[in-house]
Length: 216
Length: 216
DNA sequence: TATTTTTTTTAGACTTGTCTAAATTAATTA
DNA sequence: TAATTAATTTAGACAAGTCTAAAAAAAATA
Ligand SMILES: [Mn+2]
Ligand SMILES: [Mn+2]
Ligand SMILES: [Mn+2]
Ligand SMILES: [Mn+2]
Image (cartoon, rainbow over the protein chains, first blue to last red):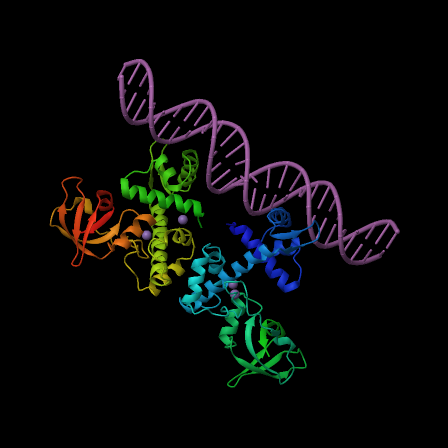
C-alpha cells in the first residue's frame, strides 16, 4: 500500500505531534535519521497524497487518513514488541529494532490475529498503550516521577526513554513497570529522589526520574 | 544486510536450481515477476558480490555464500508459514503472501526463537522441509502420485502446486497432508486415478495427481 | 551449412529516496 | 529597524531497481 519510508515518516510525525504539538522539517529529519532537504521532498509527496497538511516553512500536521495510517503502524509496532517479549521471551531492551521492521508487514488480518492470540493486550512492554483495531487507545494520564512531591505514591506505568541503556538500568535496579513506589525523600543537594516500594529503597537521579512515567 | 530484492532473486534461483537443475535469465524473470533485462542487471550485481556464478549467456549457479543466504530465506519463509497456520490459525492457502514479506525480517535470533517456540517443526504447512539453523534440511524422497502403480500405497507428504485454488481443492476433498492413500484404479479412458484411504474414495485427475507428492 | 527463431544483453530512460551545496525565508538579536 | 543567525527549500546529483526497444549471441530448423 504505502512504502516503508512513507510509513516511517508518518509515524515520526505522529510521535512528534504527540510529544511537542509540532512537527518541523528539522525535527522530522532528526527523528527519521535523514537530512532536512530529503524531508522537504518527502513532505511534498505526502501532501500530494493528502496524508499531511503542509505549507512551506510552516511545519506539518497529519490528515485523518495520515493519522489512521500512523496509528496502524504504532499498533503493529507495539503488538509485535509484546509478542517478542511475552511469547519469544526477549528482554524489553531487545525488541525495538525488530519491531521497527515487523511494523511494516502489511496484512491487517495478521495483526488482528496476533492481537487475539495474545489476548488483546492493552500496553506494550514499555507501558505504551496499544491502539485497538479501530485506532482507539487507552491514553493514561501519566506524569514524570520528577514532578512527584514528597510522600506521594504512584505506580510506574511507562518509560519516556526507550534506549537499551536506560531499560537495562531499570531492569537491574528492579524499577520495572507495575511497581508501586513512594517518594520518601528529595535530597537538598542535587534534588535526587529517594523512592521506596514495600521491599527496597531506590536512589535515582533527576535524569532517571524524568524518564519514569507514573500513574498517580 | 541484503535488500529484499537481492534476497528474492537468490531464493528464486535456489528454487529453480532445485527443480530443474538450471536457472536462466528468462526463468528467473518469470519467477521474480520482472523482465529479462532487469534480471541481467541484477545478475551482474549478485556476481559482483560473489553470491552467484555468472557468465554471459550461461545461466547461473549459487556460490556457497549465496546458497547460505537463500536457505536462510527459505527457513524463515517456512517457519513463518508454520507459525501462521499453527498458532494464528490461518488456512494453508492463506499464508504464502504474508510469509513472502516476513521472510525478509532480518534477525536470525528472532527466527531461532520462533523455531523453538513452535517446537522445531520439520515441515511447513505444505509439507516442505524446514532447514535448521545450520541450513540442513530433511529432504524426503517423494514422488508424484502420477507415477504410482495400481494398488500401491503411500502417504501424502507435500504438494507441488502452492496456488490457493489447488490448496482449497485439496482441503475441500480432504486430500490433506498425512493421509495414507492407495491407488485402487487407473481409468483406461483418461488415466485419471481413483485413490482410497480407509474411509473414502477419491477420483482425481492426472493434473491433480501430478501435484500430490507421495512418500511411498 | 545457412537461415530463422529464441534468448540474452546493452542502451537509454524513469521512479523513489537520498545527499551536498546554494538560495531563500523566517526568527533572533543588536 | 537592521543585521545576523537559524531553518527551510531548491537545484542538481547519485544509487537501486525497474522498464522498453534495439542489438548481439546462441539455439533450432530447414
Ligand atoms: Mn519500540
Ligand atoms: Mn514501545
Ligand atoms: Mn519475499
Ligand atoms: Mn510453503
